[in-house]
Length: 127
Image (tube, rainbow, N blue to C red; front, side, top):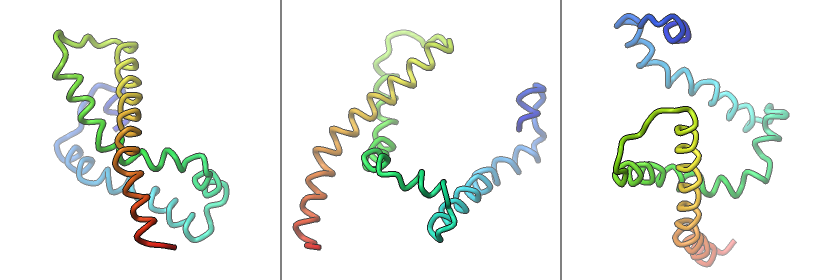
């Protein structure tokens, strides 16, 4: 797709169909290989980086952020009184704001729902 974006020409219908139908699958193959290599002990420095304990708090929030960010964006768009003007600064400002609000809301939801559920799970399943 690089040449289509930079030359200004569009892909053919067949090329577009092939790209749309196979791009996600071919994107997932390298990711699957990294997961497989790390699980089998062949990850090396990538496994060390991905297993770093700093990622643990963020990993607990990411699913909740994934669930809450469309709601944050829709609330923002529905509450707007005027149109959005495209500038690079405005788009960066909106994206960073949505990320911060989504993580803040995910933290609150995680502390209100997920943490008590984890505590009950620990009580029920005594390891």
